[in-house]
Amino acid sequence: MPEKPERPEVRPARPADRDAAVELLDAAMLEVDSGEVRRRIEAGDVLVADAETRLVGVCVLKPGGGERGNESEITHVAVHRSRRARGLGRKLVEAAAARTDGPLTATFRGQVRPFYEAVGFEVEPEDEDEDEDENENGRFRGRLR
Image (cartoon, rainbow, N blue to C red; front, side, top):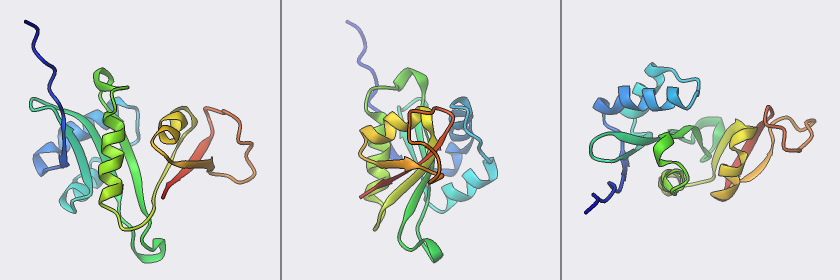
């Protein structure tokens, strides 16, 4: 009988998760500063999807505060290629939204716009003068809530 695939658990990252989280973000071709990821983990602002034997998803948050008010931002989100299109990215975003008191935002490239729209973000071009066509090279800003 085939073995059932592991059901990933979404949880706060631990310091020991840093290297695997950075590797997953890097594999998703995201610009990432490992020192910043370490600081965000220490602050409790990184969520991971843990499939017992390895991390298969990561979401890095920048909490609200200061001039940003109570608006928190997803700075990075990545899911391992073998686990994409199974709702894991949605679970990470939902867990991030549950941790915030106000709106959740993200700035992202056009090629991931469908993901953010699918999880409920209202999306607009980052540059107000930019045409809102399906330009994959453009940058977009999304807001949830």
